[in-house]
Length: 305
Image (cartoon, rainbow, N blue to C red; front, side):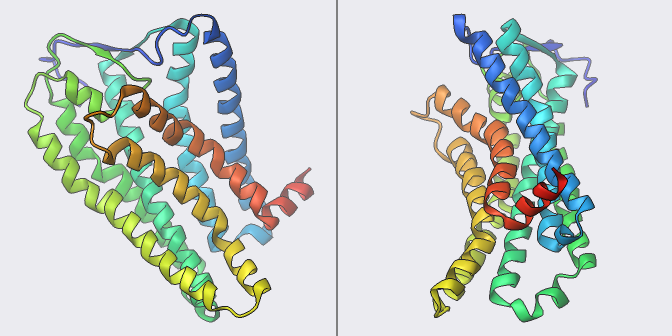
């Protein structure tokens, strides 16, 4: 899909955040530190879950998958952004742009579905604790973790193939820091109505359904928590899902701002900020949130150090 000979555009120019003059170097240093912390934090979660017996449970197994998804997201987006701060406009090949779009879409869908699976795990742990380990055994957990990856890396293929068939006749300047669907759609001189229809249809299984499922599970979780008589019991039950709830709020909040708010009156800078939150800060926050709020991970970190 990267070898279409008829396209008149062989490369794209990523404008990033434009010319920030004297603070370009500062921004490069800041986001380089963010990149390193993101990679280190998510790798640490994966390693801790792999080598610590106390963390080899369904909840932490799913968390390690979330961390791997965040790693893919960060390594796909941040290098180009760093290059933009250091060298200005970034040139990306047509094939490289389509590839970046594919992995961005795939990891976004995968993370949406992984967060839904994790909410089901928390629902079972809080609302049905006596049957939790009989239902959520490791084999079932492994099967649940495979589907988000499988669907994430296959469902978006049709949309990516549709974009790869577009003609880009003249303008090749993308006012963004990575290849996203919306700016490519605006640049194309082809009819994009099919892509718009596909986007609406694929948002149902990839965004709306997982988000709705998470909302329903947390309604059940909160109902169970509020029915607990003791204050200590309520706090203990809420602590088991608070980290996941924060991650869900950050991730879906960014997606809602980015994709669900109408584009009219929706400035480009707001879109870039929402994209930053989604692609840069969410992968950074996830391991930090789980490390700070989870006692088991803190204990594993102490033993490792």
